[in-house]
Structure formats: C-alpha cells, structure tokens
Image 1 (cartoon, rainbow, N blue to C red):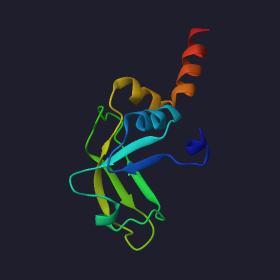
Image 2: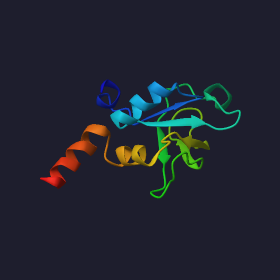
Image 3: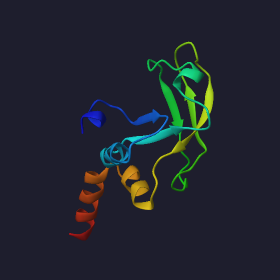
Length: 112
C-alpha cells in the first residue's frame, strides 16, 4: 500500500520479478517495462523527472504501445514506448478499478 499512498501511479523497469509485479498490480500501481535495449541509463532518465503516460482504454494485456513522455528535466519532450505489464484480463480490471481492494469493494457493493 505504501507505494500507492505515496502517489506513485506507475513503475518503469527493465524487468520485474513475478511477485513484485503482482504486488504493484494489486495496489493499483501500473508496472511498465522498457522495450528492446532501452533503459533509464540509455535514455538519460535520472528518476527526478515528471512523466505523462498514455495507456489506450482498449489496451490488451501485455500491450507494447504505451506512450511515455518526459515532462520535466533535461530530457523534457522525449517520448518512447514501453510494455504494459498487466498480463491478464483480471489484472486490467484491477488497474481500471484502482487495485484489488477497490475492485472487490465495488463487486460487493454491486451484489448487495
């Protein structure tokens, strides 16, 4: 919960251990993965930047066309594509609902 409570909405990495990716999804944090040979170093990303992430509404699991635009810092204006590491339909639903708990609460409210 700490990650989401700090206002973090996505994590961009070269790869994810299964359990860490799954934990992010459960908290409503979107795991994104660099494509090809890209990484923070090759793109000059320091971690102090602000980003705009564009995920189309109809993105399938594992979509590789997520657009990332750097909005601040030396690399402002740089755009690149990343992979959406929501790997299943249920994970997409968790994301759309803000995580597992909000998803479950909505399901319970609808069935009451």
